Length: 73
Image (cartoon, rainbow, N blue to C red; front, side, top):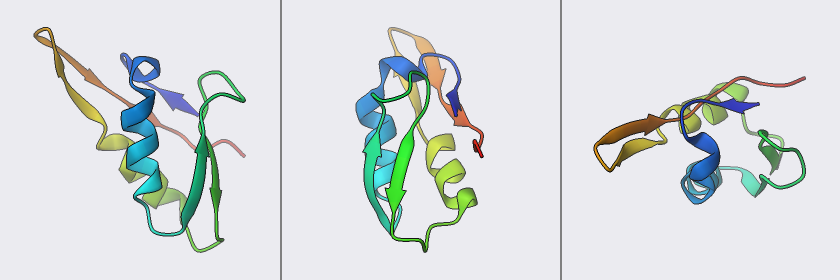
């Protein structure tokens, strides 16, 4: 599950970060609001996805924004 300030306003950055994880095949942010559904080859560890999301942050209009995540089971 995704959460954090402004996370939902930056879907491209979230998708780009997750798709860079080796083994990730596809990312779906549309099916479940506030969630990222990640299709992968089975080699991806949960921690890799969490670290990718923690790297999604920036500044826009002088306001810092960031995303963080937790794994849904």
